[in-house]
Image 1 (cartoon, rainbow, N blue to C red):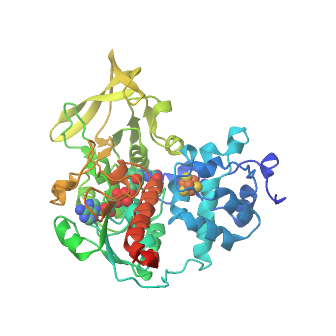
Image 2: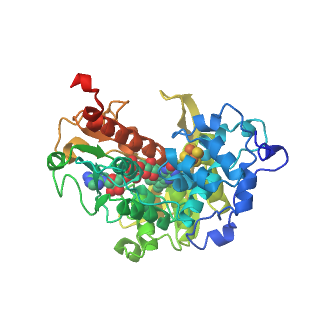
Image 3: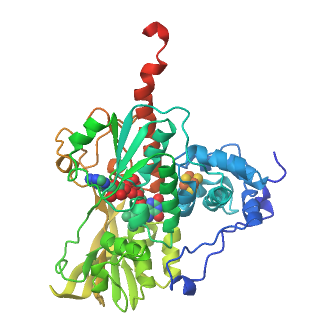
Length: 480
Ligand SMILES: Cc1cc2nc3c(=O)[nH]c(=O)nc-3n(C[C@H](O)[C@H](O)[C@H](O)COP(=O)(O)OP(=O)(O)OC[C@H]3O[C@@H](n4cnc5c(N)ncnc54)[C@H](O)[C@@H]3O)c2cc1C
Ligand code: SF4
């Protein structure tokens, strides 16, 4: 064991410096600063090298965390980068936005013993940022160019991970996206204060320099039929995400001033990228000077409340129908929102939007309590009678989750099988759909999930395609 490790007994856990809430409220910059070199080494050296790496087991990618922590502690950064990038296509992105408290860091052994987890995510980000800064990340140059071509539909993390892995094998790779920029929700969903957009653009540039072709503003099903794409390519990866927003079902839900979370967040991200958005210019998607109520308790709701704070809202309240302990969003992001001045109304659900079709003017809220568990095992919220209250609200943002669009209809492929939830039905080992040679990855398979899981799927689909298309070459001669 390196004597540089096991420092959790003498060194406390530290995260990179977090900017103070007063400054954070005024801009959209990331809220955590980077680790300085000596701090990253010091924090990595807290790892106990415990022998049973629970952190690795709870990382969806199975990242070799103890090894790269040890290499960082020893100052062997280029090797740390090689180990970290062997299992993850975007370590600097996962390091920033994975809910580590629920994944790697939540199962760290020294966290369990009360010493505070190793700051795995921040060290992961630090390793890859160091690699970019030192020019260690070079475009791919496959040892052999292959004749087969793969089409990837969707340039979110699932599609980008698949594209990289396939290009590494020497396939021709063409990625189609209906947006004008690549990155999917990394660009148009997740706000800048969690993930600055040049971090995403740098990944796309690297893939372009590696020979991946991107076709933007191209909506498959409208600009080309799915059947045409299947004819053009030897295999397809569908990584189209989930975009059908769940709606609010209460009186007044259609009033002006009630808006969808993704419209609101996409607008804010577009403004940050220098676009002009008419629905912001006319005030509809601008929280400035307004009393804002966001409905929902997931990551999307957290991103909306914090965006509203930065746009200069008069007040920002989050309504969630269960309690804090049962909130689906990241604990870290909830406390960041509280620090920035967001008010949380737990056990509270919308009863009616006040005002009229021309203008929302307040919201009536029901107080809830937790009742018996539902089929998923979670306790269902039940309305308490005669416990309603009103909140001022002139912008109400619905962040109630997302479902898949109707893919068989969108692609004109009735044989593309879907589950009862509308996600694509796949073989769990290969991620191949019901259409031969068509694979799927990310949210369109899992339902709304996480970036790290989309990367897992993209890699898995790419591996299955590679195995299928190269199987003939690796067959033993005797079998010919
Ligand atoms: C507001 C918000 C905040 C989030 N915060 C976090 C977080 O902090 N941490 C985390 O891990 N996860 C977070 N998530 C979840 C995460 O963003 C998703 O799980 C992840 O992006 C899924 O990746 P994907 O590649 O499957 O799909 P997406 O990222 O959704 O990408 C799908 C792409 O497919 C394209 N597309 C769709 N249909 C077509 C078509 N017909 N033709 C061409 N292109 C098409 C879309 O334009 C899009 O670019 C958040 C999600 C949201 C909405
Ligand atoms: S990818 Fe996510 S879960 Fe895995 S080590 Fe990195 S931050 Fe942790």
